[in-house]
Length: 237
Image (cartoon, rainbow, N blue to C red; front, side, top):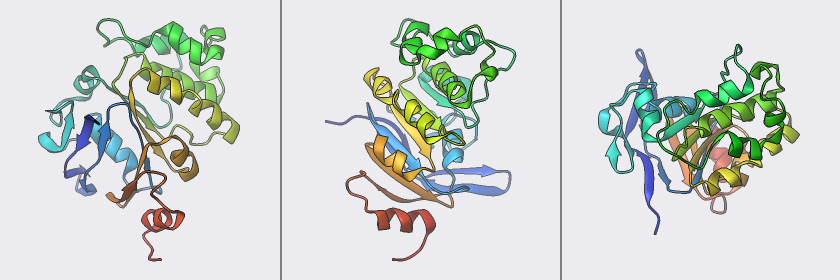
């Protein structure tokens, strides 16, 4: 029997007077990987920012492990067990690879699956370059530092916002090769992707968004190419 870990309920969000989300409902079960797809401006990153407490919204609009978390600040959401890999990585240029990773553990209490060694095990190149400035690495390696930093908090829900953006296909493949190990650790994952093919490969279920609304949802097996095209672009078949 599936158990819901994270859900949104009629979630709306604004940037000043601009309404960016219109009654979004999604659900993530324990151990599940969800993909959020959609074109630029669809509201995908806004949804991630709302879940992680970076955008205000109604207190009851988000629930995590059965409790309302909509009124919590971003640090409080992280403490509850939700971590995000932000779009653009946002590493600290003055810190080494290892120092960037350790920042992710600052709010952690007790022991968990993810440590420096377990992060290095899935990305051995980071162990080799642990004393290098993080921003001196290649784009793909920097992305793995950002993912590792988020994992160091031992989250129950890991949110990945456009982690393949601007990277070569071979690099994207290497990054997504780490996902089975992340799922093995027990974390549920939400992946925001513009690459529909990649999203369908890794996700148990897919939500498509357009103009701040969910326009389609289902498993990769249930959704046809035409279904996704129509939901993605808002055209009739």
